[in-house]
Amino acid sequence: MLPLMYKDFYLTRKHLLSLTLLGLAVAALLGRTGAGTTVFLAVAWVALWNFTARVGYVEERNRTYGLLWTLPLPRRVIVRSKFASVVVVWAGQLCLYALAAKVYELVGLTQFDTLPPATAFFGSLPMLVLMGLYLYLILRFDYLRATNGLRFVFLLFLVPLAIPAGYLEPAARWLEAAAAHPSAPAAGSALAAAVYLGFMRVAEQSFERKELRDVG
Amino acid sequence: MDRIRETTAKRAAAGSAEGAAGTTGAGGDDLAVEVRGLTKRYGRFTLDRVDLTLPRGYIMGFIGPNGAGKSTTIRLLMGLARRDAGTVRLLGLDLDDHEREIKNRVGYVGEDQPFYEDLTVAWTARFVSRYYRDWDAGTYTHCLDAFGIDPGKKIKELSRGTRVKFALTLALAHRPELLILDEPASGLDPIVRRELNRRLLSVIQDERRSVLLSSHITEDIEQIADFVAFIVDGRIVLAGQKEDILSRFRRVRFPLRAGGEGLARLLPRLLLAHRSDGSSVVGITEDPAALRSAAPSVPIEEQPTSLDDILLALVKGEC
Image (tube, rainbow over the protein chains, first blue to last red):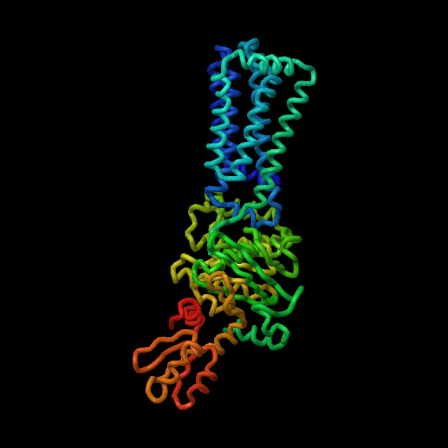
């Protein structure tokens, strides 16, 4: 699995590096405004999305499933390598974020405005789950349909804005109480991991059935 | 021709290989390819109960027009598509149960050569080599040198011919017992194709290696194959040893005068394909003896035929 992951990182290295450097630069520039690390986190999410899209798209553009499927390795390994690569990028970006936050704290820049790394971690979990969904859609259908599907999911997040606040209040109160519960971090992490792995499992199943379709 | 002579001698010694290509033949471990009832439906196209057998150590040419089902068959053999029915055994192993082991021992070059365009030749080879148990760096380097491929070049900088050679290099570098080539020379100009065939011939001389080579260019097959199978509209219409087929099918010519008119009425039954210019008939027959006995008084000229003639007769009924 490692050569496959290494290949994905190698193929996307320029974009990943430039987005990460951009995030760090923006974080440094906005340091005095108190929003530097938060902006970095946003750029990290964009980088994660970009990476996920590219590891799916690069195989389609080069038609390289036709190469990978001829290698003596189970198809599920190809799927797992992609899901593992996304986790590595996600974790790597969080580590960078934690490092940037620490640097901010050490140099005395707006440490009171900086999101604690733990909050950043839990805030990033839904993004990881969404990338799991995105990868599943790419492997099940194709890059274009997957991207449209994900855009639709993002649009769904706007639905609450159209609902009068009163209707959402009970749900918001419940969420608040759940987040305050001592077991919330562990339960939230476990739930995110389970959903992510669930997407990986269904992606494996549909990838197993995929085939090169040219007739002749 | 040396290859053919060697093969003929080997076949004579082996004896049991006689008639192995096609719908019947030896079973089990003596066979490099054993396909039974292979079926696949894609919309209106159906690959219909294809049977193929190839004994180890031989080369089979898989011939058919574009869209006949050659690539579909080969994709099913390589597990690149899922079959609707039938069994596939390669090198004595069932594809469903031993796909990984089979892929370790089979070299494949497809019609397209899908590689990561932005990576170099050397990078790609390193990546692919990680997955093969028997990767032989010496063979890889030797083929690279023989084909004149620059390992530092990016894939997107390679010409179509060089891409095919590189794909062949990768396929050979893990020392496969069976080589499956799906129209590797398709789209190449005649000069590059001839050179590729020459290279191909030299690298597949290894008598222990079996080769399944699909092509719609019958000249390629005629040069190197021991066995041939013709596929038309998803069905195997003819299969067997190439020499047997070439000696069985004959090009015939006879005049329409001197009793030829009577013979002309029997043409659809006796000739696979025919045409007439008013004074004589030219055709392809599988059974010249039957033709002679149908009209013993008619002077019939008989000439050898080519795989191309046979394919044309089978597909279009033309000659």
